[in-house]
Length: 299
Image (cartoon, rainbow, N blue to C red; front, side):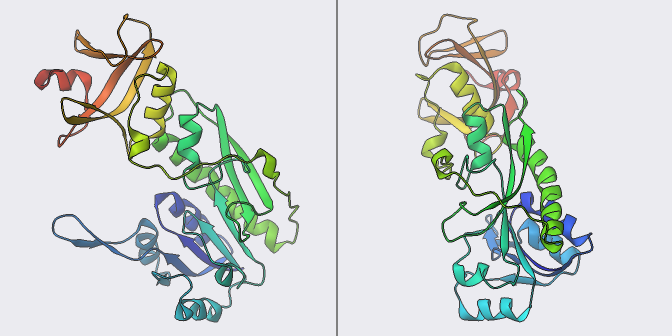
């Protein structure tokens, strides 16, 4: 089939590569516009655009997805299907263009965790499993009929990066399998049960602040869900400290928020125990182990 692929971050690259190396033909790649970054305002491409350039694929970029020229260009491609992986919300005027519809790869077992940050929220909530789902697009976000789902276990040591990377690989397989089902007209659709839906809203800076009055397990899961990006943090003496790795237990009887440094280790009191900080990043400095941190810093 002739495919137009929509995607932006690293998560989408595995799926694009899988399609590009299959019997399907990628006729164009749609990705976010280039951005200026850093002090030198150097223009950077999205990971999907970098892959497209390396593999000589046509790239389309548009700030406005309802722009008439953008829509006309998509129509002219005469694609059979649109595949969406980690992209913006497509308007009806776009996702209804191809004759076989448009489907999305989502990072959860829908209808659980509808929204922008399903991987993070699965970790933050301490789930032991998650998954990926492909579904046909509808006007209401993340509500379309399910084509395929694949369950993925969450290990105790998983954080956002490790789980994200596993899901991108498995998700790519599911995307290709979905394309083949659609092409062969062997899709068995499942309607989502809206009563089982749960939200996975975008992560904001305010959500990343650690509340030491929470149980230690909740804080530990928040750190996992936000590591390495954007990073959970706490503030001490007017400075911000990001935390990337923790463990928890009841080694010391500390007050809520009380910090103890002992034998090159950092412990902080919570509602029901202690959090040990294993990796930390002081404001304006690099990420480091607690042992490295305590060579030059003190609380």
